[in-house]
Length: 306
Length: 284
Image 1 (cartoon, rainbow over the protein chains, first blue to last red):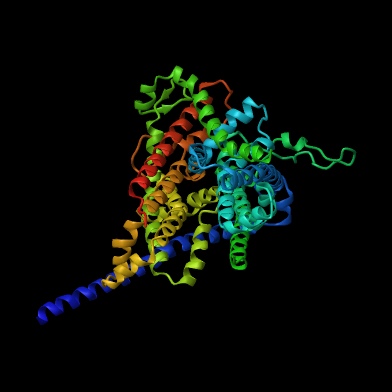
Image 2 (image 1 turned 180 degrees about the horizontal axis):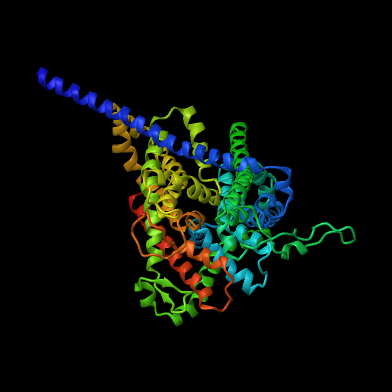
C-alpha cells in the first residue's frame, strides 16, 4: 500500500519537475528570439552609429566610402512608398469592403478568398519576376519609380485586404441593421458607418503593409533597380503652371534597402559601415511604423466597446 | 456602380495571380524549347552563363532545401515552444508585452538580416568552426530560422488560444500538469492551425532571398553540407538581375524558369498545408 502510494507521489513529483523544466525551456525560447533582436540592433548600432550625420543624409552615393551618403536612397524610398500607398490602399480597402459587405456567398467569392490566401504565400522575388516581364517590358514602364511602386503595391495587397476584412468583421451587425432600418442603402451604410468605424484597423493594416514594402529589396533588385544613382528624380512641384509634374514617376531610382545591399556586397570594410548606417535609418523607419501600428491597435481596441 | 468598382478591386487580386502565372509560364516557354525538361530536372550542374552551358536546376534546389532545412531546425522547435509557453504558461501581462516584441523580428527588413548573417553570425560561428568559409549556408539558414520564428509562434499561439477553455479544465480536473495539458489536449486540438503556421514558415524560408544572396554565396554547388557556400534559386535570380542581360537572351529566360520552379515548390507546400488543415480541423 505505502509502496504504491510512494510510486504515485514519485510520479507526481516527476510530472511537476517536467512541467517546471518546460517553463524554463519556454523562457529560453523567448529569450533566444528577443536576444537575437537585441544582438542585431546592437551590432548595427555599433557599426553604423558613427556614420550617421547630416552629411550622410544629404550626400549622394560615392566611390569613396567616407563621402558616400543616402540622399538618393531615402528620396527614392519616399517616392516609391507614395506610389505604393496610392495603388494599394484603394485596391486593398475596396477589395476588403467588397468581400465583407457586398460579396454573395458562392463559389466565385470563395475562389477570390482562396486566391488572396495563396498570394500571401508567394515569395516576394516572384512578384519581382512578374513585374520584370509585365511592367518593365510589356508595358514599357522601364526600371522606374512607377514600376517599383506598383510592384510593392501588389506585394502588400493581401496584407491590406486581410486587415480591412478583419476590421470590418469586428463591427456588429446590428449597427448595419439600424442604418438599413432608417432607409440607408448598402453603400450609404458602408460609407457612413462601416468604413469610418473600422478605420483604425484598416489604418493599422496599411501601416504594417507599408512597413513591409519599405524594407523589401528582392523584387526591386529583380526588376533591375540596382543602379548607381547619383541624382534625384525630377521634382514633383514646378514653379510654372501647371505646377505639378509627374516626370518623377518614370525616373530611375534607388531605395534604402537596395543601397544597403549594394554596400554590404562590396568587399571593403568602410562600405560595410555605410551599409550599417543605411540599415539603422531603414530599421528606425520600419520599427517606428510597426510601433505606430501596435499603438493604434491597442488604442482602438481599448476605446471601442459596442 | 459603386459595387462594380469594389468588385473590380476584389478581382484585381485574381488578376495578380493570373499575371504571375502567365508571365512565368510565357517567359519560360522559350527556355524549355531550348532545354529539355528532363535535362533541367536531372542534370546536376547549373552553369547557364558559361560558354558550354549546363541547365540542371538540382544544385539550386539543393541549396534552397539546405538553407530551408537549417532554418526549420531553428524555427520549428523555438517557435512551437514559444507558442506553447505564451499560450499555456505566460501571465497575461508577459504575453501582452512579449508577443509584439517577438513579432518585430519579422518586421526587420531582410537585407538587414543579410548584413547580420554575413558580418555578425558568420564571424561568431567561425570562432567555433575555424574552417567555415565567409559565405556559407549555415549562418544564412540560422538567421532565416530566427526571422520566421514569429510567423510560427504567433499563428500557433492564436490556434492554441482558440481551443476552448473547458477542454483544458477537463484535463486539469483529471490532474494533468500544464505540460500534459498542452501536449495531450491543446496541441492536438490546435493541430490544423499549427500546421498552417509551419506551412507559412516553410514558404517564407524557401522564398527568402536577400539573406541567402548576401550570406550564402552565389556559386551553384551541389552539396548537402550546410557549412559550404551554395546558391539557392532565389540567390540565382538576384545574381542574374544584378548583371545586365538582354531581354531575349537565354540567361534572361533562365530566371523565369527558376522562378517557376520556386513558385511550384511553395505552391506544393501550400496545397499540402491546405489538405492537412482540412483533414485535421477540429470543430467544437
